[in-house]
Amino acid sequence: MYNSPLLAALTRDPSPSLAAGIMRRDAYTCQYCKVARATEIDHVQPWIQGGPTIASNLVAACQRCNRSKGGRTPAEWEIAKLRQAAAQIAALRKPVVKVRKRPLRKARRIRGVPRRPTLAELLQD
Image (cartoon, rainbow, N blue to C red):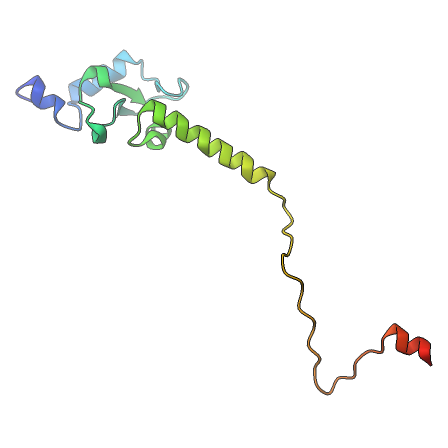
């Protein structure tokens, strides 16, 4: 597909033969979660960060891991996952019932409707 290995390293998508070789090398298993069946090829050092499209920089990945990793290195991705987990834990620790910070407004009196007598007024009679 490409005339030279240098030109192949400068393109984003690997050639079909390189992609097939990566899948065979990684036994069609996601190299990030080690559980799911790999369906995509991922750059370990992201293309957006200057990672070349060579066999040593490509791994087989499942769609979930590949989409979650995005344009980050595996180390950056781990930090992002830890931050997300910490945010989820913090959200669970927040009280479920919200406390009103300002007092309730007094109910307005509607014209023409007699008001209820207070306890003091009832006892006074």
